[in-house]
Image (tube, rainbow, N blue to C red; front, side):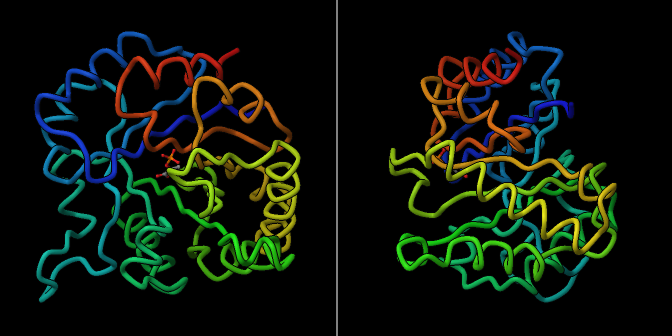
Length: 244
Ligand code: PEP
C-alpha cells in the first residue's frame, strides 16, 4: 500500500503569527503519513524554517525568469524554501483562466527544478449533473499531464469544484468511481507501473469528521485540504485519520 499523503492549502490566508500552527502540526505528525502545506508565497521562507515538513507554493510560473510582473518562478520558490507547488487549482483555472496546457507547463517547470507537484483536476456542478464528470476530469488529467510524470514527484488531486469550500463533500462512491477513471487514464498514458506510483488525492470540504471514510476509500492515497488545514486542531485529526 502506498503511504498516505495529506497536503494543506492555506490559499490567501495566514500570517507570520499563524505559523505557530505549523509547529503544532509538526509536533503531532504521524510518521506513517506524508504531510505538506502550501502557504502564501510571502510565508514560504519563514514557514520552511519552522515547520520541519515540506512547505510548498500554491502556484508557479512556467518560465524560469522574465517579464512576468507579479509572478514567481520555480527557481524562486525553491530558493525561498518550497519543496513543491500546487498547479491547476480550480480557483486558478477559473479565476486566472489557466488552461490544461498552462498547468502542464507549470508542472514541467517544477520538475525541471527538482520540485514536486500536486496537479489538481475537477468538474463543475453543471458538468456533473450533465453526466460529464468522468469525461471532463480524465480529459483534464491527460491534457495537463507533464512530460516525465512519475510518482516520485507528482501527485494528482481530484477536487470537484462544487465541493471546494462549500461543505458539500463528494460521496465515497463518487470519489472511488472518479479515482478509478483517473487510474485508467494514467495507465493508458503511462503504463501500469508508472500509473500505480502516482498518488491520487481527494480534495473538497475534507474535515476531521469525513476524513476516515474518504482517505480509506479505494484508490485514494490522501487528501488536499483547504479550510481545515489552517489550524492544527482541525488538520491533525485528518492526518491521524490517514494513519488509522
Ligand atoms: C482546496 O482548496 O483545495 C480545498 C479542497 O478546499 P476545502 O478543503 O476548503 O474545500
